[in-house]
Amino acid sequence: QWAAEMRERERREEELREQEKRLKVMQNIEDQITEYVAKNQIEFAPGKSEILPAGKIVVKKIAELLKAVPTDRVEIGGHTNCLAETTKEALRTNMQVSDDSKCPHPFSGGDAEGRRMSE
Image (cartoon, rainbow, N blue to C red; front, side, top):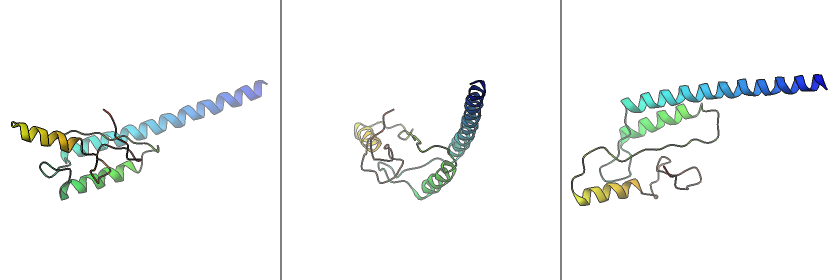
């Protein structure tokens, strides 16, 4: 029985070491993405959910970084532009674009199954 307990303890310790490695990898990737996006924002056409060409390059780079994430689930969030929208119509349009569930891009506020994600 003592030997079985030792094997179980070793198995759990190895599992914890592997989990710690995965967390370090994920934190490193998150840091890389945060730094990259801070320097290279994903820009959209004004009043639309269409990503501009320069933004598509940023999305591709993020996708490449995400391939190294040791998990099968990733949650991505964002926000509308930071431009001061002063008119009621501009504000309404900005809110509509933010809530656009028909956006064809994978970063449009839904998960892999197309479900809307909450904050």
